[in-house]
Amino acid sequence: MRIAVYPGSFDPITYGHLDVASRAAAIFDKVVFAVLVNTHKAAPIFATEERVQVIHEAISEVCPADIAARIDVESFDGLTVDFCRRLGATFVVRGLRAISDFESELQMAHTNRKLAPEVDTVFFMTALEHSYLSSSLVKEIAAFGGDVSQMVPPSVSRHLVARGRGL
Ligand code: PNS
Image (cartoon, rainbow, N blue to C red; front, side, top):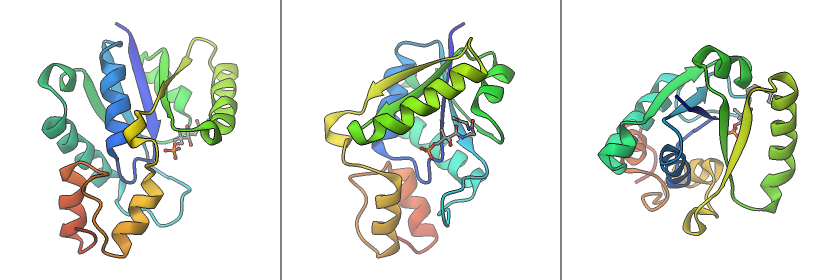
């Protein structure tokens, strides 16, 4: 069983993340969205449990059933590699949108490999149509009441509306 962990803040999940997870699920037996509990990023829009819930809903409404069946969602605290070991995962999945992502992703991949040589990082080039997207931009647009419906799955829009942010 080849298990891949897809770690991130996912605050909120975007179509770019969903695309990466779906493509990873076509390669690995199981892909687990690993939602970081204590993101150091300023002012999370959704609490951890809500981010997990939003991703679950997004998978079931956006991904084809055979792909959705291979994607799980969990939250984690601590090191990504420790979470991988707990799950028996031997791959970490990350998306690369642009050269600007590369430097920090390279550093993380090397660090994780130093900590856990049995865990390898696999990168997916974010789909061109999603390569401009970022969760922080989505957050900013939603905070000012802008329309993010082309950037995020319907579950995110619903949860934003429920808390009076975004369209
Ligand atoms: O969505 P993000 O914020 O870019 O994801 C960053 C994340 C969660 C992948 C990274 O911060 C992480 O792995 N945090 C867990 C702590 C850890 O393992 N740190 C060492 C990684 S080099």
